[in-house]
Image (cartoon, rainbow, N blue to C red; front, side, top):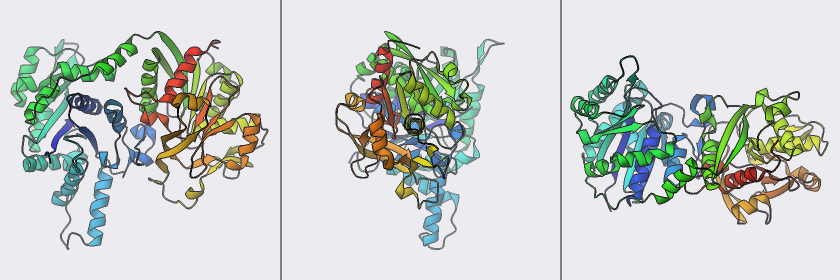
Length: 538
């Protein structure tokens, strides 16, 4: 069996420099050279997973096929590589400590004092190796969350130091991403923050092999040489990562900088064939040269933070390119939509999306949005809670069901058209207990969903506790809202449509999670196509 090679990506100077995008871009280039690659994220927070975190805290919670609630960077990994991730691809400090404490309680440490070193670092190393076990991958890229110097990151940095010593330098390299700020007053790029960041890494026993420098201005040769000299890195391993118009340009920029060639050389691996990125370049060409444009309103409750709906935003980028269209996505706060202003707020858009979410805040604004789209025959896509809001609106205003609501919002609703799933009624803990991961769905032949998927059985990812109450099924069907997607085992309604409208689809699952650059999700592509075809733009 070929020995697995490890690449660690750390960050310095400041957070949010784009370690996930650099990791994904490098992985894409290595994949295009013929290597099997996966990416893992180590998150230093003590939550077991981000499933219980407010989106304002950490952005969107991404869900894998096997039901893991993970960091949003795993979405980037999947979108770039077009390879599903799993439970093993996201490790948190909470999960690490939970595992070590459970072992201690069972007596696995034979009475020894349990310490950060070696027990916590050993568990981190075990989980790093786990994702590469089984011979499926030749290269494992591990992104370490946070910034070097953060107290929470220290056990991860120490684990990397140990692993590097154990595996040998040709089997384990470190890429350090830093910022080179531009001081407008002096007109200079400043390398001192990078020097200090590398110094902090050296204090922890790690010499980076490659430096990737985020910058707003091109690096001069002198700046590269200065960084190489003072950070003890060869000049060819100083890589520029300049700001670009779209994250999907980054792989091509990294290819120009020979990042993949440098990494393979340091790992002692052959360069393989030149990366074939024709489809990627075609996608970028369509993205930058659209023939159409559509304005889409996304109504949600976390709109102040764009990362809260990251997968949806990116799915529209993919779907737009697939339709040769630019998608102008406008975020509208559902709390601002009221009975007296919803027409004014929603006028001027070609299509409307009601986004997922939890809780009562802003719910009535989402229900009014569904009403506006239905009455005005505006193409509509409701995702998870978005479907539920469309169902509630239809029950109130078409079926005339007084007090129609979800029991999540009103446990004593007179007409609970959305109710807690049966298997959820005995659940008391919040973390990791929803209906999570991939489930099958049978799609009604001839429906809008079927026209998008072109198959009668699909698999989609879920993250919810509440569902359409099947007691009301016939009433909805008879009134014109059709259940056109159901789970074959549980009978759970997964997709609802109003065939009399131009395009009105609500889904209980999260299609955005499985959209990638080279495989835009069929529902998003179909929705954007419907937006382009809209004749009477209100």
